[in-house]
Amino acid sequence: MTYKTILSVFDHTVSKAGLQPAIELAKAGEIHLAILIIGIAPPSPLYVYGFPTDGITVIPEAWQEEITAGTMALSAKVREIEKIVQDADNCH
Image 1 (cartoon, rainbow, N blue to C red):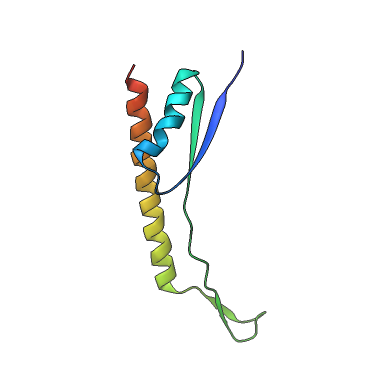
Image 2 (image 1 turned 45 degrees about the vertical axis):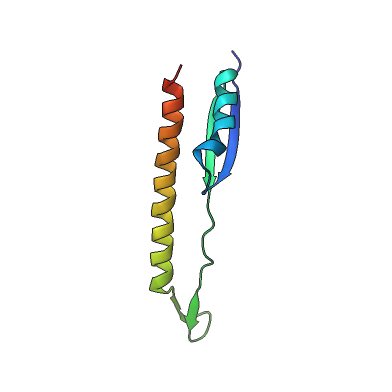
């Protein structure tokens, strides 16, 4: 038995039309399609008060809120793509 997989890496802004070539190629060859969606996280702003070895590390709350919002947006995009792929699988 042979296994065939296509790994397609897309930016988090990919559209349905952008996914279509990978979906069609996988369907035509009866190949498993793995999709990786990437996004860019803002750099971690760490602040240390006092001596670096003994100081208190502080991560600003606004940064955590930005990370949480980005994670939620990326999760929504993943659900959108899962639906697109699932719909494509159901169209024979």
